[in-house]
Amino acid sequence: MSTTTVFLGGGRITSALVAGLHRAGHKGVIVVHDRNAEKLRALRRDFGVAVEPDLRPAVSRADMLIIAVRPTAVAEMLEEVARYAGASRLLAVTLAAGIPLKKLHPRLGARVGWARALPSPICRIGRGLTAVAFARNLPRADRMRVREFFEQVGLVLEMAESRLDAFNAAYSPAHGYHALATLAKAAQDTGLDPKTALKAAAHAFADAILYWRESGQNVSDLLHEAATPGGTSAATLAAMDAAGYRRAIERGLAAGIRRARANARH
Image (tube, rainbow, N blue to C red; front, side, top):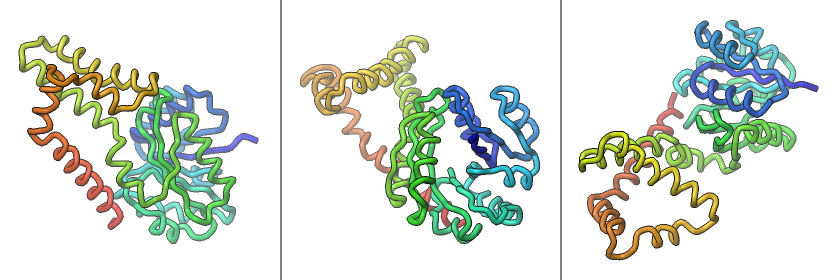
């Protein structure tokens, strides 16, 4: 029997997930609710999903409800959902970073089973990475439903909820884009033209990581092989480390974790 998954929120992560599911040939019904008519039109046009500007009929159709609004909007959204959720049991998955399940469960009552998921936008091309955590009382069948849903768009990692904030700070593709842009700009400043600088930086990240994935070799071994002692790569990395590269990364991750945990106060 076909199931209906309802997304509450039609923003970027919903768009990425819908694109990935469409690419994977998802068999269930997908409904997206949002008050922004243009977002709904775009999702319906590009992926053929059902759209619903009104919350009440959207919630009434859901077998699985995915809360895909910003963390600051979750509380208000759940207050509205509580008015329309029926008496039957419902599986709800929140994508909001930082907000723990213990804060969500009381808002909709015992009839709703909860999970948290942190999907990467790269799920758009089926190469996503999603961390999932489940409420302790969530039945095994519901856990499998959540895992199988996100496995359609990439790798799924199940972990304790206490680890989600650290994972969220570390796994963002923004790290790759930021590092790519920074290395390309530095290479350009040394004299390379912009196009060549970007290609060189992209090779340093994308092709090197692809080789690591396909070769199955240990990262430390590959690093030792690539940065030969006394060579230019070794000198480059040593200078970067001396300038505080590792400390900058550590401070960045710590700031991301603090931001995620601040969401729990809303």
